[in-house]
Image: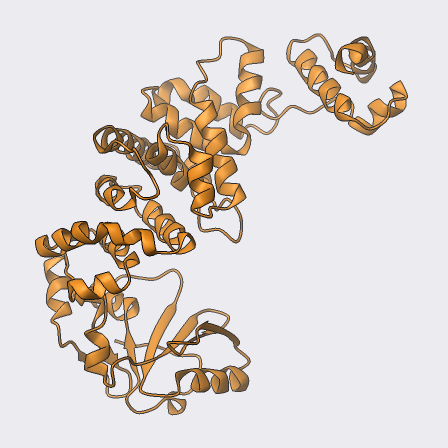
Length: 403
């Protein structure tokens, strides 16, 4: 087990240990796309991190001043420094959430420290709590248990599952921002199997009042089946589904389709605003929820309007329609149009722009210009307009209607 750190090991105290997910994943043989390592040191964690940051030109982020946790950001990895809690490493490990996360690796002596037999839980593929009190101390750990079970393909140990359900009411004490972050992670690992997400919903009742688990289970299973179908048969669409909504957000369109299923007919804008979701997430879900009522297009104008309605969230629309019973064979002509950048219905090119229209018609900038451009687009789709001059003449005839 090796952890190549971007600074000299001589900078670390003799008792320094790697803890948490990095140790767990190394024991499972899991490869990490993003390298992040958590170190626990006996004392002066923040001061140690500041000194290494200064000497190695790494970014420094104070994560938790009260608990003495700081992060160093290097070009290809992040390293968190935390001061051990409870006076000893053993006491620190006994404060953690699940036994599989309570394994330490002594980085200088190159040996495992596993007082709770977390390695045994890894071999048994079980998520087992250290104690119910530890979960109660930070109720977000309840959701994290479900997320890590889904992520690793593990089962929740029975006593742990009962403790999580009994502690569920405590989730209302967790800040909305932290809940939303954990929900994003949970959505991201639920693409292959919605059962864990369905089970976790009972913990989210405070944020999702009135949700019907029985209906939800069927809907989420249909969405995950649709995602698996696209992954296997339309790689280009699958790739787009997994692009982030924004460079600064981990959320993807695939996650958003699951969130649509999760919310169902609930007032999504209100719920997501309360959860401090981003504007991009709220907008994407609003667009996709509205497109679920779209019926199969029977004319060129219908096809044009479909692409205008879905925009860059077309891939999510495909997922939701597959989940609703449409077939991939039926949807393929629309998918082919979407990826054809020359297609006049999915990627229409206006014959005239707003500036040219204002100049030609001697009009000021106003919402009417947008309305006229939309009318021109429809005229092009219907084949009524084929030249720039025809576009301007058509707009002139519509000016009175758009004022």
